[in-house]
Image 1: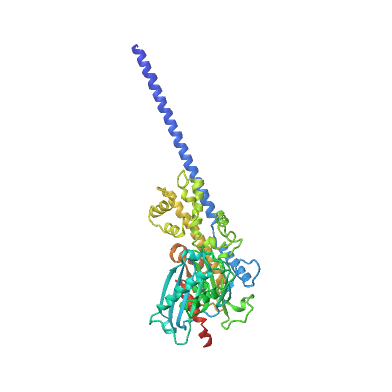
Image 2: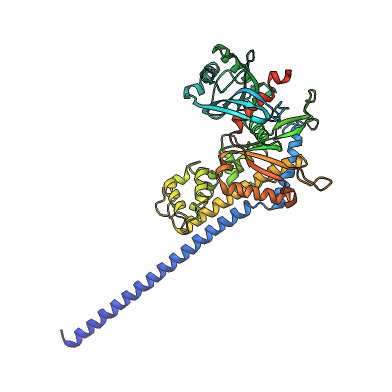
Length: 506
């Protein structure tokens, strides 16, 4: 081959190589452009989902006032016993709340789930208050949760009898007096007196034949007799009513109690003459504690999103406990999961593949949501660790972590503000939402119990700030929201004391 041919071939090869490089560069540029476009599209979709959630979860003050008004309307419907009223406004038959003057030895039995507690307390009257208290917690064997009524109550009575036998010298029962018990029974009951009520249905994993429609106090009393235990049930109470009693014992200005934990409920002190469905003699105190069962509150004003509706539809009790499903600890984490799942599907929030665990119902618990929400590290490393532990996502982007934090904030804020609207509704029903004619304001206390309120600090801070906003600064200055620990336990013992057979005879 001649020199000219070699040079020509080199030129051709060089040109081909340059063309190849050019094609590669163009291809790389196009790929990068497509990646940028895909990333921009992903961000646009994520922003669209977030914007929709922000709109659907918005709770402006005007909306909250409307919800409070709806709460008052439903309270009044329930007090009139109107058919189909969502709030049953159950009469508790508690007409005497503790005053602080109670004296003597009293017991409580708190049955509300797979464990129960037995409690004793020595009350020393106005000066000494609670002299001493003791309690034990007992696990219920799983087979008794699906056995017979006799087996369950015999087991409970036997544990109670063993606890009574450990009564030390610090506890004193006067000669000739019978021990008395407050029975907290946190299952649906149709109460017929302060110390009687028939079971409507078992919940929380219990399925026991022969108890529905029966008086649960009579069942317990017969079991105590079989154990040779001489004890009278002086009060049958719901845990929320117990919390109100415990709150009133500690602070005489408590007018309502709210449970904000796994579930939610509220009870308050109503004027007996404001209860149209009350047909008995008016109590001497003139008051009656109402167990609202407010978790079942529903109204067109509640800002229900697609996530709330799908959660309700797929729940064990569709159409029921609508308010509870928006504000309680059982459901807040699940709402967050559903929003994150939408973001994972629509906007590849956690990568091209949706994490399989994110598809699992209730895998994201509210305590985990709270831990993520309270992450103050600059790179949200604790939140990222939670997502890895719970969802199995090994590496989340900073953007994904901040979006998750924002979703937690939206869900918690809405829940807290809706809960505050409910409390405001109760205060409005009682006329505690405004100044008196002389522009003064009596101190008003709201007692709140439950792990959601106690441990989820951003939730509780938002609730209190929202209540202040609804009441206005002047009225809010006299309204106190305080934590009431263990109300359902000691509260039941205190109600046994305030409704003691000996107190009535005195």
